[in-house]
Image (cartoon, rainbow, N blue to C red; front, side, top):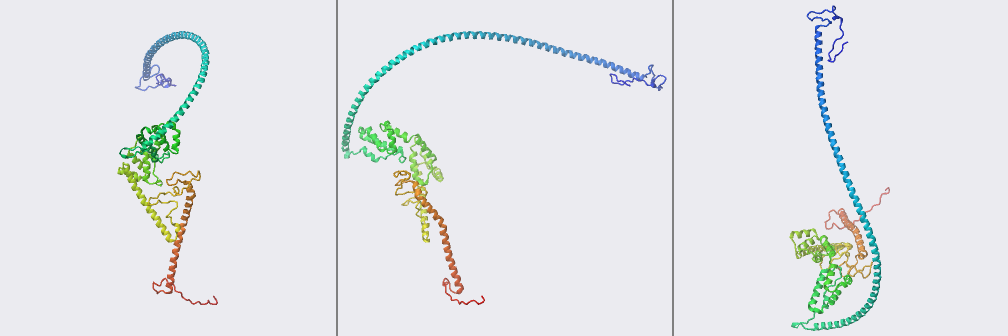
Length: 539
């Protein structure tokens, strides 16, 4: 069997019989056989193997030496690092011990300080307790003294009350006496004022003109204010102020505050009079009345409401003409406190009307109230002409119906939509809501004397009553007539068709009877005698 050495080369171990001396034939030229039975070639091979093995051993030794040197160097470095780390850990341990000692000392010092402070606080608490006890005792003593003083004051108050009651009774008696004297003086002064006024009225002025102005005559000229929106509050106040200033200038001291108040009181009616009664004690003259009147009827809330109407209002043709709407609203908007320019006010009011009017105001640069009023008059005139043409058309249609014998179809004089007389424009386009009753229909749902003041006619009327009692019947009547109208038209068409058919029949008969007759005799029917023969027996 062959065995492999460490070098990895196969070395024969068994020697065959062929190489035993005396039994092996060595060929020529292949070497000699050694004493051990190996050839020279094998010996050389083994020698090489031995040298190689020795070289390998030396190399292994060198490598082991190198590895040992490297490992020893690395071990030394590791040992150095470990020593350095041990040094640093020792230093850190010393630092930690030093810091802990310092912290321990600081804690001990802080504990000593806290103990000192607590000792001081305990002393202060003890002192406060003693002070509080002393104060409580002092308060008890003071409370007892106060109670005694209160009892004394109550006794004094009782005495003072009894004394003041006696004095008040005396003063009241004196006041009653003074009131009687004042009433007497007032009556005498009023008589003197009347005499002076008569003298002034009868006193002639320079130039022979009689001085006949009297402030009582202003009541007839002043318009009464009810607070319900017919008269603007600022317009009323302006007229009243001019009247009072005029009376002050004319009469001077004779026109007293009492006269001013009586004049103001006499021109206020209904709701305004009720309001005046609530603030009567605050009003001493016209200036105080003016301040309270403005705050009540033209304050911030009223002006904000008017501004909203200016910005979002819309014109409704059923309530009147455009010119009337402009005059009513312009008189309100011009009294606003901030004061809107005339051009801005005109443009905002133009937006209340149709889009065509608003665009025309912007396009033509209309900035004044007079120009805008003239433009609206032209639009109202055009509408009146259209309404007149429509009215003429309705009347003409009614006449045509009358000619045809359908008088019930004539709606020229509509009972639910009357036109204004004297050529004015149609007052009411909405049949169901604006019916004017000149005789005056009262509100039967409430009081007979409570009129509906929303209509601007001679009487104030209730729309609900008019609508339920009259409009409903007229509306149903109109519906029935509208439903019958196709029947009337159908009957007329059938009648005309029947007349045409009869005429065609006459022509056809005449052509059969006399096909050669003249056209003038075409519509005449001649009676022709025909012979009648009895039917056969076997019929």
